[in-house]
Each structure stands twice: as structure tokens, then as C-alpha cells.
Image (cartoon, rainbow, N blue to C red; front, side, top):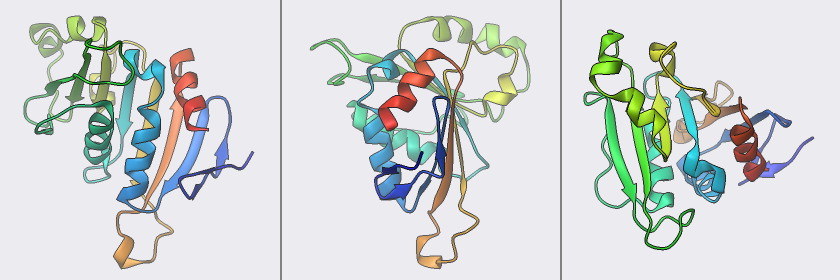
Amino acid sequence: MHTRLHGAPIVGSGADTWLGRWASEDDTLRFAQRLATCRALAHATLALQGDLGAGKTTFVRHLLRALGVRGRIKSPTYAVVEPHNAIDCPLMPPGEPLSIWHFDFYRFTDPREWEDAGFRELFASPGLKLVEWAERAEGHLPAIDLTLSIEPDPMNTSPEHDDARRVHAQAHTDIGRELLACLS
């Protein structure tokens, strides 16, 4: 099945997989805006994979803005987790904010930190969880609904478009499949 999303051809797609390309940061923004329209996102856990500088935090910033988060959006690299509230989130009933937690486990090394920091309670609470470097907390995380892998596009030969990315989304749960359906 070949479809198009925001000008980026999908290399392959199915019920559990979406493969595509973001030619520019504008494509990243449009992808985030489309994902932000999916009701299942309000209760999802997304793992974001990619090397340093791949665009994970840029995608998160666009997604949080699309969900209605205001103010400064910081990377949680040193804090491990940054909480956000989307006050005017289109996915929520009027006046009810969406709670969002953006985790970055890049520096996560001690499993005791999981309990000491209260991560179990955060992941058990309602809201959206965005997890960078999820593999470093393996064995502690609940089920991941959707894994979004982002990497620089190796086929890109244009220096003026060094923000081109290949993107692979993999659903692991029914919520993940709902999210993929919103992208099609």
C-alpha cells in the first residue's frame, strides 16, 4: 500500500508499521500535528528512538505545541523527566488539561532510581508519556504503545536539507495501532 502523508511517500505501511520520510522540519511539524488529532494519544506511551541529534526532542516540541502546551519546552536530558499540562488540548473535554510527561533516560544507570524518583507512579497515572532512550529503562517501563524511530536520511544528498529524516513507526498495542490509523 502506498500513500502520501504531507508530501512524504510512505515506503511501506500496514496495521503495525508506518515507514516514511520527513524532508524538512516542516514535515516533522505536520506529522506531529496530525498525530495530535488522534484521541488515543491522550493515554499513550511512545518510545522515541534515534541517535543524539536525530530529531527526537524537535518532534516532541512540535507535538507538545500541537497539543496546546504553552511556555518553554525544555529537554529532560538532565532532569530525566519534564512534566507538561496542555490546558487547551483538543483531545480533552473543555477545561480538563492533558497531563504529559517527557522522559529522557539517556543518563539512567541505576534501577533504584526508578523507584526513588516515582517513575512507576507517573507511568501508572493518566496522560501521555513520551520516552527518549527507553531501552535504558528496559525491564522497568510498562508496555510501549508506539515506537517512533528517527534517523538522518542516508539518501539525502542536499546540504540545504540536512534535516531530512527517515521515520519508522511500530505499533505494539491496540492504542499504537489507533495512532498509526490516524496517520494513514
